[in-house]
Length: 321
Image (cartoon, rainbow, N blue to C red; front, side, top):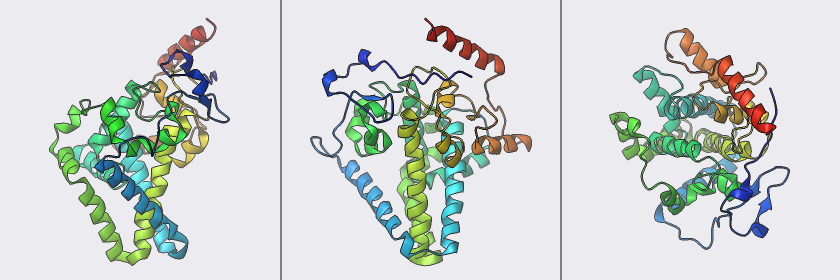
């Protein structure tokens, strides 16, 4: 398979004075639309609430060395697997955002609930933002592109509701979820589920379990997810000329259950499988295949060899134009 490692031709973008543009170190990505993260903009009440929550869980994580026990560590590790794989990568991303496969409703809702406990937003919010990301990837309408700067693409966009409202006033691309009572209920009661999780952890194992089960676990899954938004659009290689900045990054492929094969994903966003080569570890795909094998996952979508060859040939032709 060819490696293209191409960047979007940002000289063609509406990026203001090009003398102000800067290149992100060790990459081919140019910051054309830097956005002021903290000063020079209005902070909405929701921005302050989100910032306080992020500050809280990060401060909680600082207590980890002083509150370490092996049982608390395994609580955090188990939560990392459940909320990371079943919650975010399998259900929020591949199932809900891209309809890459189907699950029985009872299993879909169970997996999605683990995603709720990942504290990355309710399913309607998360899926809507992600679908817009694919529609407008690395353009002026992308919510979290590194063309706005590394920090903004990583997590700064979450504290800038005015920016998101400017891009998408209403979440009109998730009617499939809005029509389901379960997802509307989660949307209306979202924070109570997080508070409940924290209360249960504290009741079960005190401050130690709260630090590891809520703080460490949440922050770890946060930044793995955010690295897909930032790092996987900056550093890595491109196997497919997708016309955007998406990259395959093997480290994130390993640690975040196959999500790091991000250029593969942008080339075939409908695919339930992200790691196409035998050496591209994709734990989420292995679980989907298991669920398919026992009859729980159906309508599993993957690109055929003919589809991959067609796209590869198209890439090759365009490369030598």
